[in-house]
Length: 390
Image (cartoon, rainbow, N blue to C red; front, side, top):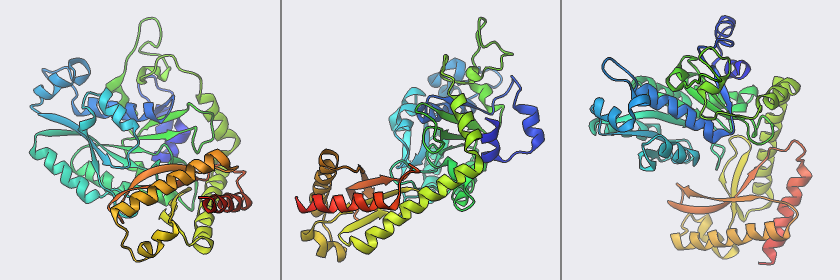
């Protein structure tokens, strides 16, 4: 935890000497995945925002309804991008604010959240007597790989005294790359950060991490027992949703030790370069494919535009009905790739700011270090052959 904490929050040696092995605090915990990590970060945020004070035990003991009543609030919400991972719906439900309490903000053409609209929503909440428990920044959106302006969101969080949580489940390891780490500028200002080991830290499935800038923050969720994980125990389970947990920290430790910072930098740089090479090949050799999201890191979104729609597409005048027809054709193409092909691309649907509607796209994720240019060439040539049969 200290290794990852230092990468994200950049504290000095004395900080880690004081806090790494203290039973009173927690730099972070290993979880079963990003879903539980995100829940844990927001759990801390809720308990801090509605915490104890003279005459009131806090939301942890009193529950959300009594906490809101004590603080003379009408509601509580979480604010983040429309590209937030679906795990935030689970967290909002579990923490008692409900999925309607998860306020999603539109994104720009580059898929980064509209920070100006985020501030407008904060001010609206203040007028409506609603507590904002957390602002969520996305660092590597699952759909697009895009990274929000974390520095700008951190400024908002400090301005309005709101917990700032960053979901870096996918993009967190960009911090290893000297070429790409600037994409995460501002992450060190977060109050909590999620990273998935089983994504770009190359551990087996079931390894997430939640990190806290202030090691004392998890005190707000601390739970102990008389028979195990007592108050003075070094077991971080007292700061976790999960009780009995597999020892997945061992996989994480092995990955960090064997690959090291230089190894992860090489992997990140190579995967990002391969995604850009894929995008360049589409532009140069496949003019009937539209790049929907340029790769920020190693995720690329694109779609096939059938011949009968290409003139209107190039003129920028596709209708909603034509986009629906193009969606259906791309769904058919991706199904054929899965059923008949020897390569694979996934599929998703995303709101397009260009067309002001939801479109179906093909989604390429370059994460396997054994992926080479010939594999990309083969995948595209196979898609071309399948298109000719449609």
